[in-house]
Length: 357
Image 1 (cartoon, rainbow, N blue to C red):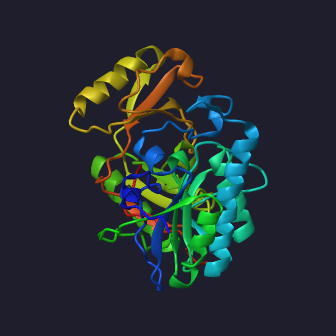
Image 2: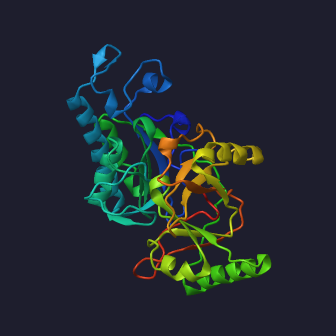
Image 3: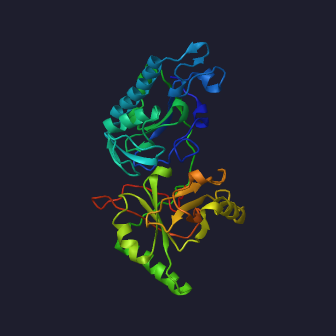
């Protein structure tokens, strides 16, 4: 059976730079990478296609057809199904979800901690290969999997499923051993976003309001997935917290920043204000700036200008003549954090503390 240690250099699962998610399940899972490339193509000696958009292009004298692409995609899904059956994995929990586009209607809501049956998980995995569904790490105690970049599939399987790797190779995929590395376990938010949590946020607002002798507000960041489509921002006073608490999504990470520094500016001065904010925080490489209309609703309608984006132009702004802007909270910013339980009162999401990516 062909194995290679170069798998650890390939594209890794979302959020984990070395290619493997820390193994938190009770049973020992063995890590592998499945790919369609032989050694020469993995080294880059021979050019090969890496995406559905390559259909019609020529690689090493061969034109990629839609039929060949579909056969390859089918091969990966069949391999994942074989391993899931061998491992006895019937359900998967979504981890490290990244919403780059709205999920298809058949999939419904997609969020950290959602549990899918195997059929839905494989359909979502297939959709990710062609860009139609969000990226995610599919995790269970019996098996984990994810489609990385450039058609490298990362899997973790138990001992009893190892013989199935021979069948995977017979399908025409290469199986590469992954050399696991020790990692420090990240701290995850364990607190529930219950009445006590929201009361503590309100008390923090009251203390801040008293200190500055005017009503303070809190920036509530609600995040159910990574990416711009996976979060909402609320800027509210203490009296509005109850309505926000009733509106947040299940399994979402709630980060409450008491009384953030808001700068007011006019429409014609937004670009200059963004530039000034960047200069004032030049030591922060990730100083993204959030812009919203004034007066604003509790749920902010925002435009985020990333630290490496060009300055915003008038057409990119929401309607209105007056705007507020603030710097996106740094990862070490002081905040209160909790996770919204599901409908059954349980939390299946595993959010890293103070993770503001």
